[in-house]
Length: 439
Image (cartoon, rainbow, N blue to C red; front, side, top):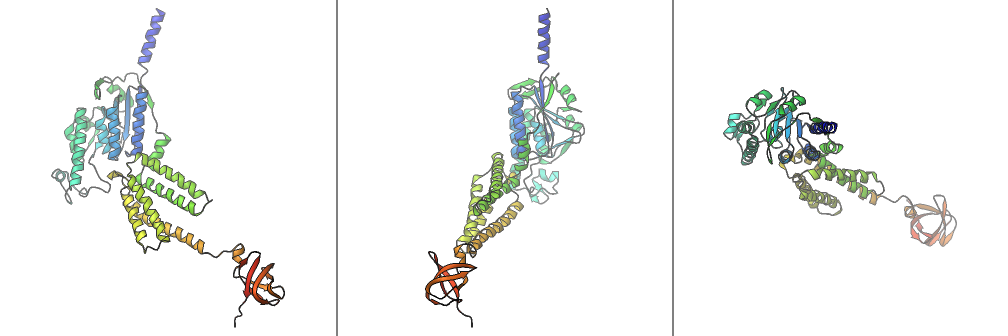
């Protein structure tokens, strides 16, 4: 009897020892956040968690990263509850799509979601000042939307509609959020069927989520959140580092610093510091490129452009190599990132082209001036100096140069004390000639 009771207690303890994994996102959706969430979802599956809570507060982010996150959520074998919190938080733009993709959508009372219209870097050409009614008719304050803008908006509308239909949420409002950039408060979202739960905190969220049926990839699934312990997966140093360097502009600058570091190191062998810093910068750039949609033709063009700028100083091409280098550098910078929303800002490109051109011209000019500089040490430095004959001699004798006595050889006779000019070296002898007197 005691053994049976112990077995029952052990069974109940195991049943109540499940885990709810908490992942937090506070800020824009980018490659670093995508990497963090994908790893968090994968770790939750390995830990056999009962539920994943994705707490978000985001103004939106990049389409490429957002779609990676959504694909990971839809493929997850563990139910994902996206929770917009704390009070005052928002799930705008990309956050709205993630909320719609989740198996359960929840919000804290004083939060909002929406404004899910896709925007290209630099803004849509007709976006500023456009009214919702005008957008529905395909027009903006500056005229009709171009073909690319219509394609982007229509694709986004179809995408969020499919996510809404998968989880039985309000698809009509989802499309409206894309086309008209409208927003909702938490209470309005619950009333319109956009979300499933309004919860004051995570404990309240788990309480309300218990027993709800959600649509998983494998089919319907009933969530059980009773007695779950909460485990928070923090962002690793890798994710925090990636958040900084995965900015296309930062990665681009790091790559250029790496290239310049190696060029300077090759121009000044043994200095080491530029080479070390350049190597670190280049490796960090390549690490960032690992998570960014990089076009390697762009990298090749950037390297080619720098090589042509260097060659311009050595080869008399009348500017053709330099112009070609600037063009190759510019085109490579523009196509470096394949995703339109991740491309390097044109201000950064223009600034780096000016700085790069000036730096490379200064560096190569300095190398040329060093090569042309007169030798100041060693035997070669004595050529052109003036000496004084120690005694009379014919063809061979001794002269004083800088207080030192040297063997000298000339083509004629030299008198003691006569000034002579050194013209070269012949073995152990200095070749000299009589110093021309200035009249």
